[in-house]
Figure 1 (tube, rainbow, N blue to C red):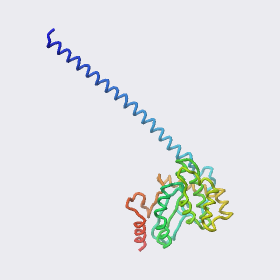
Figure 2 (cartoon, rainbow, N blue to C red):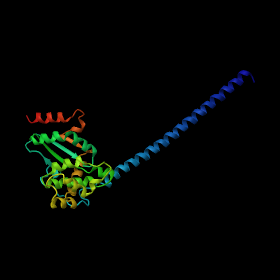
Figure 3 (cartoon, rainbow, N blue to C red):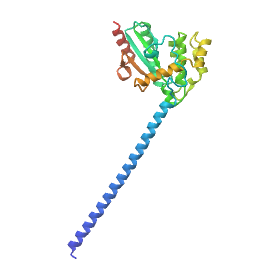
Figure 4 (cartoon, rainbow, N blue to C red):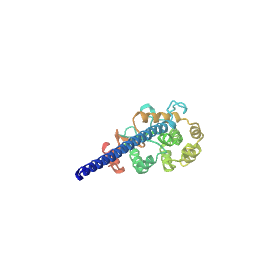
Length: 258
């Protein structure tokens, strides 16, 4: 066999060897992709199951064992699911969906509390507060429910705003379900002069407004909201306005009242 033929066969064998290696590498990549896709699907399914379990496990509907729906004194809004603060004559309305266990809700309150108090006190802003128990569902527990009920009990006593502030000023860590303890809620209520009475304590201990909190939470879900706080100023979502500040809120409300 000539040197030229031998060289040609050797080159052909090398090409075949290279091609086989390419095919092996391609097959390995294909298997890797299949396995990865399978893992992603399993993880995705697990995540979906986890979310469904979190959202259903700790969050009861208004028809569950929380008892009858008893709205607090003066409740307003669709289905009487809101506690109003401010004058009805105010030309601007702030709707707040909140969870007393929610750190972001506390951050909003800490930043905007004094401005909201100023505007409601001046008769320029009306606020509707809706209780949500999102953290109860996500992290398990019942602190959101119990705190929402206690706030409604404070509304019955005509001291909602002061107690509302106390709950945020003393909010426990998100993972600490301290507000599930009614004794803790009553202890904090002592920071509001005249709030702790036999009727208030009975309201808190009996969960008088638990069903109402669940009804408010169901309304939150039905509206398609998914996070707290959800804050709407005259229908516009403040949490989506990256330029919003307490000063801008004040100016917007003052301009609406001119």
